[in-house]
Length: 86
Image (cartoon, rainbow, N blue to C red):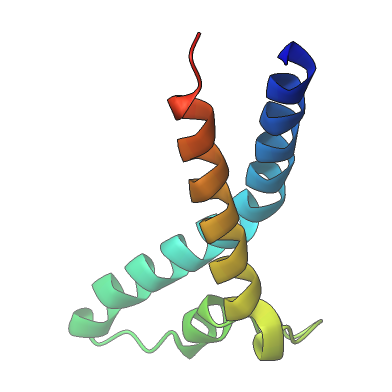
């Protein structure tokens, strides 16, 4: 039983680590863009980053799907870890 708990935690940590950077980029780019827009600053490149187009590589076709699935898996695995008895 203890091994199962350890595996759940390892999976949760790996998913969280993999999805943390894209989530951070999405959050920061959207926030900064919304702050700059009323100031009249045109930073369209932030919207491109927000949607997964990084010029070097365009991940737009599956960027939001990846973020959504990674978020759902992280939430579900986190809830399961919290429900476990100590």
